[in-house]
Image (cartoon, rainbow, N blue to C red):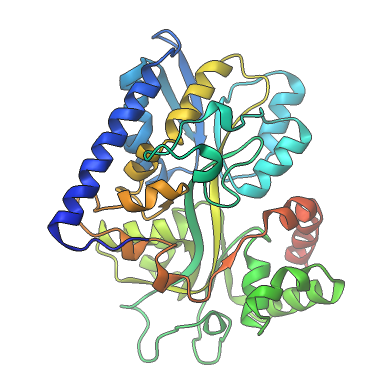
Length: 373
């Protein structure tokens, strides 16, 4: 990420953002579908839904006349699969985690998109060269870089403060309940990192029976103290209410609680699991061309930079990093809050979407069985 260095740099960035927005407007209006159409967009709800609404959904409707019906879900492909299998398709565009974007493409329940349908970067760079690694898939287009982290409430945690992922699992030094998402994804990685596995060996370790056993044994050490969450809005509320001492969370949700709700929450970036948020299209949608236009619009540099003014998720395009500026409502410099900010990536793990795509069903089954014990 580039630092904002004085007024001239900030002015240059804002000028570039204005130019990029203008370019996105032209892209959206060029050969778009007729006004009056509508699309159903499925996303993550809460502060993220508000960010994309202001960042690109409202501008898309303003430029094309296509109305957006926005609804929430908690991830996974079950509902998409059911709609495609029955032919009763009522979702059009959907936000996805990377492993689901890959698996859904392999199953044929997501539409191929491809770089030919996407806009170049704000600096003219072709999509193939502008998107970050893992951000341009056959059926998914990356729109943001986000992180799975953990956080604590500074007002409720007296004395020593946690600074490492190992501290999250240390109930002796830091007694109290923990919040974890009710899925295996990221939890297995957190467990191995906290158990001393080097970052570059995490997925090789998970790829062995012994490594999997080791991850679940580590989770066993805190299982009795876990409060499980499913929606991204839950961890900040759990921390604010004192329901948990620490909780894993999406970094952007914690940022909003910190800076928009004045909650004394602190992110621990150590051991963060980085991932790319994808946008995809449900296979068989009768509004395919309109859906493709929305994906093109949402994945422009301008749209990504606009979203980053409402939530602390980094653009998934290289040309987007110089356009990260300040929060639209508070004026806070967004750069230090981004997952890709150098100080936050000193001990970060990049999600191995290929491993999860190959093992997701198996891990879900084992995780469910472990929960039931």
